[in-house]
Length: 315
Ligand code: AKB
Image 1 (tube, rainbow, N blue to C red):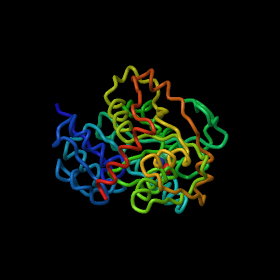
Image 2: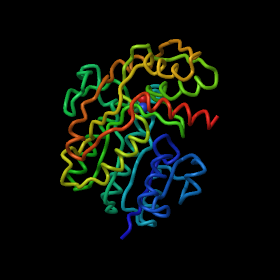
Image 3: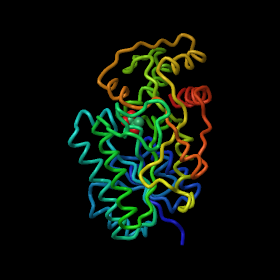
């Protein structure tokens, strides 16, 4: 029987690219894109798209039964910056949506679930260089707390009910298709738009704030590779550390200057500086590399060239 895949959050930064990649693998008609907001034209044109609110558990279960869904990718979340503005609302959305999915998967018998975690699960007491898979985790942001709690719930549902749930601790994701929404790593996307449009960018983090980052094609590959990996090879049922590149605002700005010599960056740190200061600088993802053969492709230079080219084209 063909896999029937539901993507929740299909209009977002990851979803808008993941849907197209999944449709190439599983067939356009088998990947059902949903979101609470309208999706980009290529998502709507290439296969089924519906407005669906993940908080509406009754409609969700109806959808899953009606379309005989076998896999769910639940990507909808309130990210770190936005979550600090409305902590209780963010907690409610991030947790209740995940629990809705886990419980309906158990009831209906959905075969596989993907749920994104984040480097935000780590906190100030975590070793910041080469952060190991298993380490101290005391997140100080509501987003990080919800991701850590979510990881524990995922593992609980694996152990208690035998669900197949897979997850990645994404670093900051950089892409040109859909803008990032409300995260602390968003500066590394905004900087490209401002560099092209006005030749200058005011950064909300300090110049030496190193954070783990990844170009979207690597993140999409990691997601599909993990979901395709044989279950017997997977030793982690909370969420895998995942690394691509690490850089700071000064380094990405220097890379942009190679193509736009007049580009100027200035710094005005805001509340997101404290969030960034509590996150790792570099991640040890050797468990992912050993378990399912993960490796990344894009470095800062390669990513910057593509970002500048594609955003220029778009604008
Ligand atoms: C954020 O900055 O909140 C996200 C993340 C690292 O999970 N990009």
